[in-house]
Length: 88
Image (cartoon, rainbow, N blue to C red; front, side):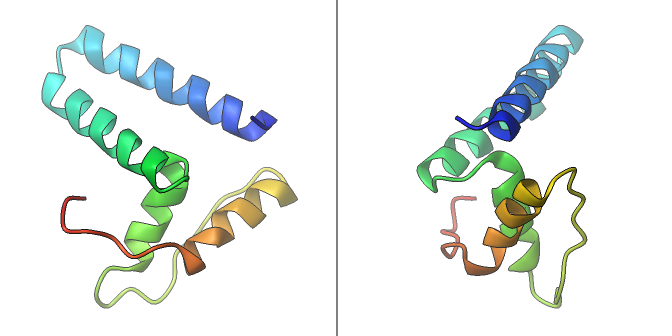
């Protein structure tokens, strides 16, 4: 794993732990499901989210933030991502 993926994973884990502590189990289960779907697509949750947004009717662009050129390149993969199934 590259450094950005590791940082992303740590942030996601921390957010999931906070949701668990707060008792927001419904959102936590959705997040776990989306994360699993992203893994099946060989994407991070953030990459899948960008792809999903870009594939919504009427959306022609997404605004992304990146802290490095590598992260920007990863974010740009959303333009060529696999189509979504109805389960997401």
